[in-house]
Amino acid sequence: MVRYAKPRSVDEALGLLADGEWWILAGGTDFYPALGARPLMRDVLDINGLRDLDQITDTGEAFVIGARASWTSLIRRELPPAFDALKLAAREVGSVQIQNRATVAGNLCNASPAADGVPPLLALDASVELRSAKGSRVLPLSEFVLGNRMTALAPDELLTAIHIPKTAAAGRSGFVKLGARRYLVISIAMAAANVEIDGDGTIAAARVAVGSCSPVAIRLPELEAALAGRPADARLLEAVEDGHFAGLSPIDDVRGTSEYRIAAAREIVGRALLMAVGAGDAEAVAA
Image (cartoon, rainbow, N blue to C red; front, side):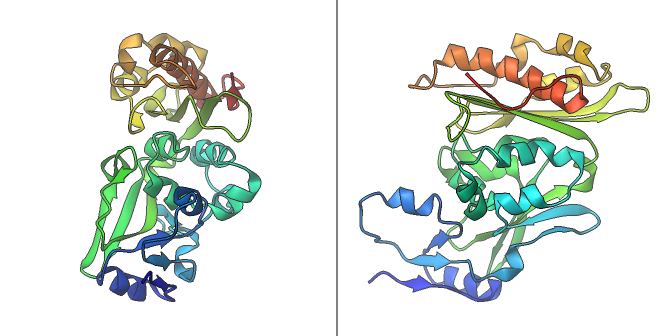
C-alpha cells in the first residue's frame, strides 16, 4: 500500500523520514511529470504544510531561502543586486504558472544538468542545509549536486534551506540562458557571473558558473582568478580564454553539439560578465 503523509512541522516530517523512504512533494512541477503514465508506487511525503519553510529571510549573516519558497516569491522579494542573476534565472523557469508553484530548493534536488537555478546560486557561494532526526549539516552547493539526477541527500534527510552568505551578496551579477527559443525551453548553455568591484573600478573578486555543459553546473576558477584586478568594463573580456572552459564536458544532443556548446559558453559568459559590471545589455537570449 502506498502511504501519503502531510506533516505540520519539520520535526514531524523528519520523524517520518527516519521511518522509511519517502518521495518528497513540494511544488509538484517535477513530481507529476516524472510519473508519466505509470501508477504511483512510492510513499509520498507532502511538505506543503510546513509553513516555516516558505520564507526568504535575512539573518544578518546570510540570506536564507526556505525549502518551500517559490520562484515567484524570490522574484518579488527585495534583494541586493548580487541576486539579479538568480532573479533572471527565476523568470526562465517554465511559465509564470510554474514559477508560482515550483520551489528553488526543488530545482536543486531535481539535479538536472539544465537546472536554471544552479549556476547563479553557485555564483552566490550558496550552501544547502540538510536536516534529519539525527541532526543537521550544511554542504556547499558544489558538493550537494553530484551528477545528473544525483544529490548528496540521504534518504532520511530533508533539504530545509538554501544559505547565501552576506559576503557573497555584496557584488553585482548577470545571467544569460541560450535556448532554441525565447521562452519555455531547456537551455543549450547558460552562464551566471557575480563580481565585486573595488573603489578604483577594478574587479576585486569574481565568481562565474556555467550550466548545461557538464553533468553538473560548475564554477570556472581559472577565469575567476584571471578577472581579479581587471577594469570592470568591456576590457574584462580580454581575460576570457579558451583554456578557462577546459573543465566543461558537454554532450551532443538534439539541442546542440558539444563543440557548439563550448563556443556558446564562452560567448554567454562574456555577456553575463558585461551585464554584471553594467557594460552591456545582455538579457537572456535564444538562438
